[in-house]
Length: 165
Image (cartoon, rainbow, N blue to C red; front, side):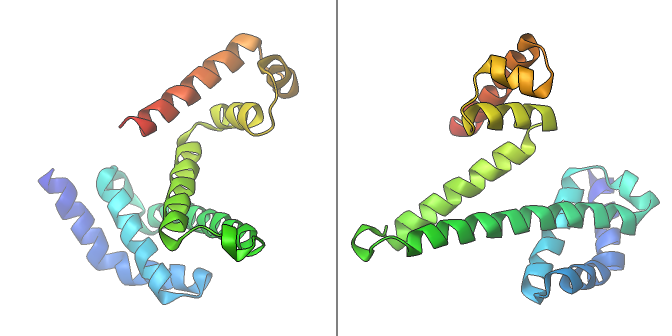
């Protein structure tokens, strides 16, 4: 564990400024760039810094790009929610506290779905959002019914774990 912390510390000292600049150029916002750079090193600390030591900037770039995708997705969800909210009459608009809870829940849902494998995510979204039956999902994706059932079972287990963690 000490090696891991030392390795991340070394990478941080040598590449943090570069990573913030990289993110700032893409996001146009220094504060968000600094936040995402922090998140990148946090992910690195939870991962395998030895792998990052081989090609640190390439490794950090990959992490940063994934974080930017999540950041933009979160912003898109928030904008869509605020647009719907703005179209509601004021009397039905939720309180600031309720809005914060809804946005937090939407963010948790986004992270949950993002954590699923691509096939599990696709099966889950087709069944839950598009309302397709398992046989319809299987037909649309060219999968067997058993594969769809296993993917849904895995997705629902992940949902259960998040709700009851």
